[in-house]
Structure formats: C-alpha cells, structure tokens
Image 1: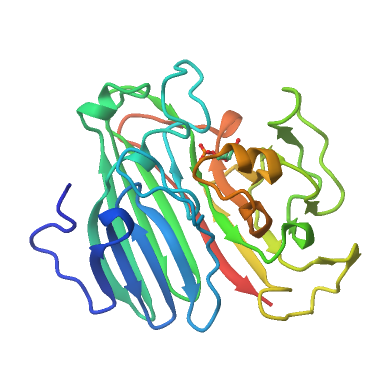
Image 2: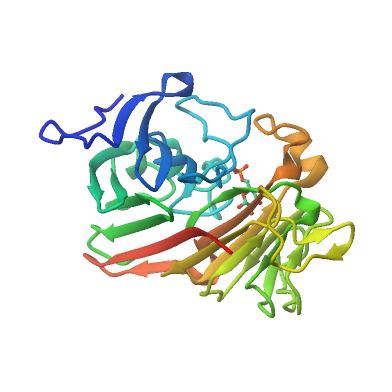
Length: 314
Ligand SMILES: O=P(O)(O)OC[C@H]1O[C@@H](O)[C@H](O)[C@@H](O)[C@@H]1O
C-alpha cells in the first residue's frame, strides 16, 4: 500500500488520513462548510455533505471494500475508457483508474473550503493494459458548501493519445419515482439499452419509470436533480422543500461534452452482487463525462481538465 502523503507534507487540522471500510486508507475531510471522505483506492469520493445538510452522495450498503474491485456508489473515476473497452473484452469496465491506489499529493485549507489533490501516473501495470500510454492525472477535490471535482490529465507520450473519462456521480434521492433531471431537454441521446442510433431529445425533464442508461452527447451546461419533483403523479411546484424531498442538486461542469444518466431499476440491481436489491429506489447517477464522440485527444505534453461542481440550490 502506498504511503498516504509525501514525507514533507503536513495536514491541516481539517484533514485526517485513517483506515476506512476493509482497512483501506481514507482521507477524512471535516471543513467549516462541508465534510467529505475520499478513499485512496480510485481517489473515490464516498461522502460529501454541506455543513448542516443531509449527505448528497449515495453509497451502496453492499459495496465491497477490497483492493481489486471498484467501490459501489460515491464518485467512481472512470478513465481512460468508459464501459467495456472496445478492443479488449478482458479489460476492466470503466478503465483502470478506479481500481488503482492514488497518492494524496496535497491537502490544504483554502478559506472556508478544504482542497485535497490526488495523483496517479502510468506504471508497469497501466503500461501493460489496454491503454499503455504515459500520463499523469491530478484530481483536485474541493470540499465546502459545494463539492468541486477537477480531473486533469497530461499526455506524457511522444504521440497523440485519446481517452474517455467520467465522474460517475451517484446522488441520493428519497424516491427515484419522484425524481427528475432537468437541463438535458432537447439533447439527443444514445440509449445504452436500445440500438446504436441516437434518439431525439425529449421536451421535458428526464423521469424514471424503468431501467435508464443514456449517454447525452454534446451537453455542456448544468443539469439539476430534483428530488420530490413528482408526487403521486402530480408535478409539485419547485418551491416545496421538506427534508430531502424538494431538494435540488445542481451539477455545473466545465471541459465536459457528455452526460450519462443511469438507474439500474429492479432486474439489474438484483444481478449486481455489490448492489442491494432495493437500493435503486434511492439513487440516481448523473455523470460528467467525455465519452464516445466527446473522447479527449491530447498532443504530447498537452493537458485537459474536466470539472464538475455540485451544489444544493433552492
Ligand atoms: O457496474 P459498473 O461497471 O460500475 O457500471 C455501472 C453503470 O455505469 C453507467 O455509467 C453505465 O452507463 C451503465 O451501463 C453501467 O451499468
């Protein structure tokens, strides 16, 4: 297991590194305006709550916490490919980044926020993978009243490289049947449960009545998850706020061209060993991505940053 911090670094009192589930090392952040937990395994955010608010991020109670499997829930970092690898059926789904231990490079207070930076570079294991390139990835997690996730990838290869990436954010909702996602109106999407042709965008928000697995391409602006938007079939005026019900989580993004919306519903949940059979009712994934035709191409020495900013809005 790598050491959590470089020898010279010291931690502010808002940050502690210790064992989490399964003994895996976790960066615990307790800032003035928000708290978070980030496993070094995958640089995986498993918790974020603004001070005084209920947690925003969803984790499965059935998640495994072992070195050779991804965690279930939180924010898996998918890189350098998304889903199954096109040319290598044996390659792990969603890339190798969520399976590797990242290094905590730095952690500091920044005003009311706490900023932790994680680093992953190519290694013999990644160089013998389906994506053998030289690279450095830096992942900056800013914890406060908002959660900012910024993944910067630098191409250290002597030739151009291409990759896909996703901040595969699992969000808590009180009831998926009452949840809607706004901000994707009119955007065409690939239905991963249907054929290869793009589907025409829909007029209204995304609502959930069955398994949903969609890639919205060319989506660069914010999406908002509205919890409690629909009650008993009636759409509630957005002003109602009662605990989690009526809560809005806004996801702003930069450097991202695609958005994935996913809920596994009944059968897929039952088929996943690390996902409780009934847990699909209280989560939705709205993922900030660059995938398929939005994949990133970098010239030698070039860097690219994809950022998601999560916040509760009225
Ligand atoms: O089980 P995994 O590899 O974490 O993937 C979970 C889901 O991730 C989503 O992003 C994909 O669109 C789904 O198709 C997939 O099932």
